Length: 362
Image (cartoon, rainbow, N blue to C red):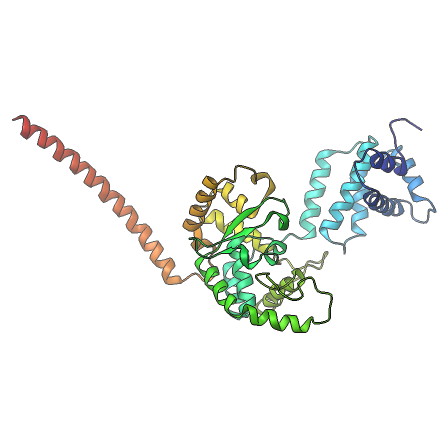
């Protein structure tokens, strides 16, 4: 055995001993590699032994992985991505030559074939808004206004709300974020109004929910301080139920998933933020992307982000008023004429000052 090559179990033991991974993670890695090995060597009693022989031969990894993924076509995109990444780690540690360009092309094609969340258009969101219940409307408006992950939004407490500021804002506590960094998100006037309307009926909803879960081991049994009083599964169901009511869902041929989900609203937020003129770095901070969340998210930056959101607020509003839009277009045209008049005024002021100096001199 070459000292530079590792059988699966030897590689995993080495990673565990070096505290690179835990025992549980090693078991997951082993399961994935066994799945790949079983595909390559069907009927073998010890496929992991065969995969060690495999890496010492002439390996076309991209072709093998591609054929393997075809057998996993009904699995989720994220699950397949994890499987591929583990196999690639094992192949690379054993110096298997992989054409990086070919691999990149393959992964991009697989990504497209697996289906990616589409951003819904505003007309669809308007239909969902008009057909939704109070609960569905406030959920939709919050997703549109904040760009939050659904898991973050359902964990927001009433105390995280600040409706007195302009724009109103929500504190996303670090313990509920993916990045473990606290941040603030903002509410459009539309979302704020819906939140205020929801707060008027929230206690009644929470009381009814408590009756339905009476006797069950529920984490929020008793006093429920969550803003929306629902878990992630219920929030997902509310969104998808609202979507199905107005839009037939054409599921992806491979993954069987809907191209539009609650997570699609983050893509929508990013798209309309750019259209509304919000600086991309502020958009990324609101979305909570890790590479843009740092100690620089200071009070000064927070004020600038809030101001930028306020300027772009109309872009995040679902039920945009057509008359408002027409007025904005008219104001845009008037602004050009106003700028020209201001320049003419400045020119005339300069001429007047010159004439005054001439008169004074005379």
